[in-house]
Length: 307
Image (cartoon, rainbow, N blue to C red; front, side):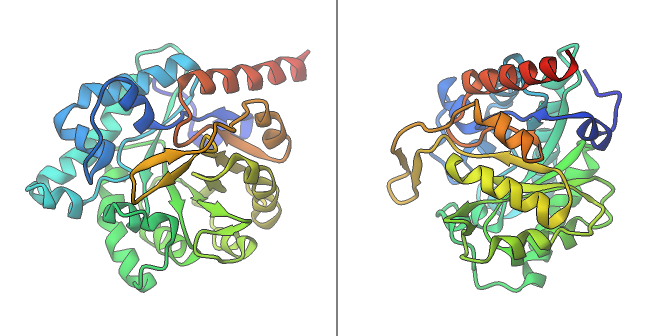
């Protein structure tokens, strides 16, 4: 159902379970995502599939749904022949589809509008490197129109996610300023640093003192890195942390395939929660079954806390 509480109020009351990877669930439903727009293509070609994927995560116990707009941009849609007006409509549809799935159940479910990095638009793995050669101002100009459209669609929060470097984080926060919707900021990291190689504490500090930012953390990373990143994010910013790592498998952008083994342990949610995480879920290759186990783990902890 549509939440009766503001997202910030719910966040203050305890941990909320995020969904998992949208693309892997769409593939499990038989969707072909071999396109530069990835799952965003289905906003035009198969919106019912997106709503069904969201619904699968709600049934599993997710209470925050992240929209299919990660790779949805005016530039990307223009390459497929969509006008600016049509592209804006598709961006808004991403919020509407998540909201429809959220409102189909009696529990409160919030909608986070995904704002992916510039590199996602390039569809060449650049979001795992950053350093695009663009200024902060140029990145701000790229992100602002999309953020304005998504904010106008009335999500509960904007997910500034999979951010590879602190300069793009600064640009995203500038672009979101004044949009009227709270945000969370989530970096993708490797080896204890941003994907661009920057000091992670300095990267988190970009959001310190910004009242629009409700949570700071990491996503789309190895789950083994998540615990330390959560502790650091809380220590640097004084804000709750958001954490939703990958399965542990690795994406090969050239081969466009995954390798390695599943290493996501839902039991780690207790560790992350104890360290200050209040938004906990999964990213690529983490499906509804795993999110269900994570939700059960956190629910058991909540029952124990109130016993």
